[in-house]
Length: 282
Ligand code: PAF
Image (cartoon, rainbow, N blue to C red; front, side, top):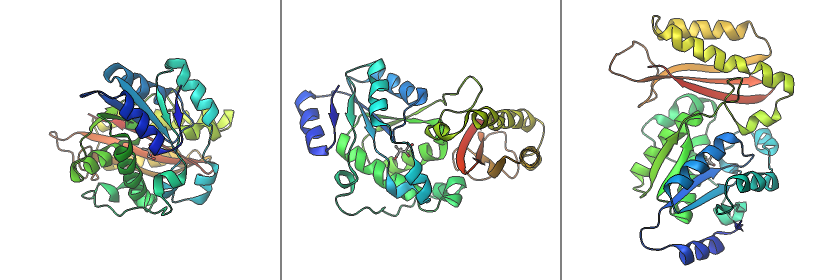
């Protein structure tokens, strides 16, 4: 399998194998790959002749230095996992300098307000960092299709907005959340949970699933109160936010409108490890 650490070599290779109209599928990741990432790669393999995965822990999207420092970096392991599905996938694992060229800073973006909700409120600068690196990666890889998981639904909407505003010629494909048997959404951060914490973290999906049922008959406010109570009764977890929001604008649902699609979003700390999840409500 081919692994490139710098964009010049990656580009040279891509140019040499690309013909006119060759579809390039791209899966951007920060590594510590799990089944969720592998399912994105499978989708890309199905629909493109070339598939590229980037593995890059992007410093500018971390608002918490401890989170950046502790983020799992498991390149060898990741490469082994990729090889289990195909040895034709091209890996781009750049250095910080290859991406940022000595200026490790984010560009400031206006994503029409999408960036001010939920993750944006609690992780200042996070989406500027995501926008900066995703745009850079798109410029380098020049994909036809790029695959993003719906677990980071706000990120997915923001990437769609980035592409629209910056007129980047790529098709953004959102892919359903991959869950462990217990229901816990797959995440690279799950690696940092103890076995006990991992088991208990199933409360996150259980609670949002109950919220979905309740939302059928109750107001968004009542559902939010229910979720807050559930976490007050579980001291090992600190609920950072629970929001029911309009899928398109990500604005909080105040009064239900049957013509809109809603989604619940949650962020929870388990022993300083931050987990997020989301579920479609209608
Ligand atoms: O979702 C992620 O892993 C990251 O935010 C991304 C899209 C790879 C950008 O660093």
